[in-house]
Image (tube, rainbow, N blue to C red; front, side, top):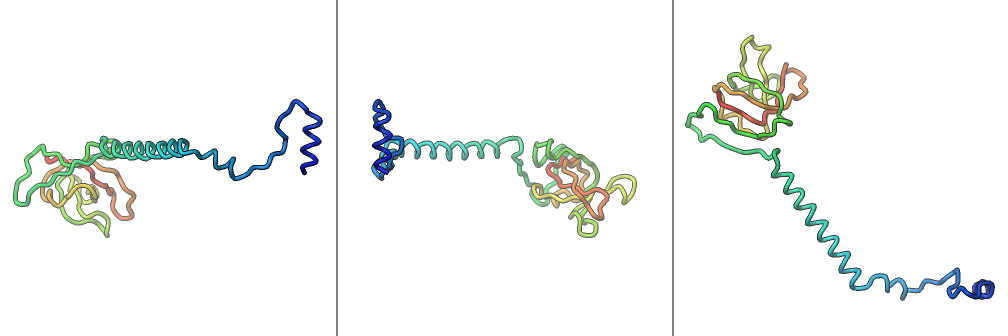
Length: 162
């Protein structure tokens, strides 16, 4: 192979480096100087911090659920609103008197509305404690869920006492 390199050098006398070059461990080590390693570590730290800050900003946005509880035994004042302000996720609304019980395992509560049982809205919620409002006339904001037995099944994210 050295003969080929010498032959190429003879054909191109102005060329100082051969076309084929052997890489040794010294040339590879020289690419990772302490300065380059420090820059790479800095980039990684900045990336992790910016990702963390971006995730914190997202959780503090309008999708943040304002939790509120009503102490047992106290009456809830009309106009009280508990839950999320995110009306893009919880865009469906319904009003009625909240009662316990679902239908065939769907929903833990239901809203009784004028028109009979066929007009009931069956409710579930992972963000608001619905048990605090049993027997109260309320308005709920939620997201309609697919149901097998309930005419209307809703995941509630916000409640207003009427």
